[in-house]
Image (cartoon, rainbow, N blue to C red; front, side, top):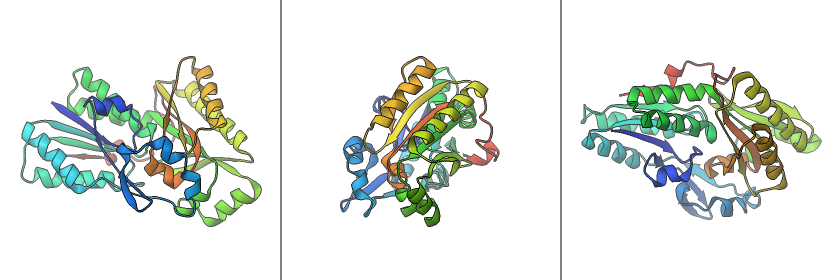
Amino acid sequence: MLRIITDSTASIPPSLSKDGDVSVASLYVRYDGEEHLETEMDIDAFYGTLEERIDDIPTSSQPSQHFFESFFEDAAHAGDDVLGIFISSALSGTYEGAVRAARTVQSHNIGLRCVLIDSTSTGGDEGFPVLDALEARQAGGGLEECAAAAQNAILCSRILFVPRTLEFLKAGGRIGRAAALLGSVIKIVPVITVLDGTPQVIAKVRTAKKAIAEMVKTFKDDVEAYGLKRVMVQYIGPKTHSLDELHRTIEDFVGHPVDVMPVSPVIGVHVGPAVGISYECTQYVKGKLEMQPSELVFTA
């Protein structure tokens, strides 16, 4: 049997982990003096207070090494293969933690077979490779076929988001202090994506409304150029009128219902309130990844 595992920053439908189709390694969020498993958080309740936490931003940490080693030990004893798809290694040490655990377990379980993949992203952009791997498994594919499906999805997907403020990004060191000052003084609002594993600004405009319009234009241009397989609208912080408008715009464009899902709090505490789109195209998205997909894979 093939086990598929991802982490809690991937925006996969909760039913998949609940039904056991996909295992989820939970990251942690620390706030109010306590550490919380992300998978057990009431995300909307947490996001309702996110803007109040700007002066004491919650911190995050990766899954424990014990969790990963226990997972691989259990798979090895059952004779199961493992496919793991994780958050960008440039954003978290989760992928490296999984690789270390796999090496440790394989040292005394030589028969363990696994492929671990750095998704180079997060949110729906991380979740879509998981969904494609699951589809490949349901179609009868083994470890190699499912890993290939996940790698293909990485090249075909993208996440775009527009932050409401740059303060969280500045506090987390994701942008320079001067860039944050620029945004607050003359209202420059960026459209951000993830390229080669790290956040990159792809457009700067004068208002949040124009930034969201630019984000939607980028999405539409990609769909026209590369086709569309999946899309979801995502948010960080309280649900807003801007989120509702974005949702309607995307549904009107694609002509069918579109899910709205919160971004992982582990990501949300670094980005701050934002709205975004995650989508997977039917062809490779130009510029998504400059490195070779083989560089993102650990095979045991």
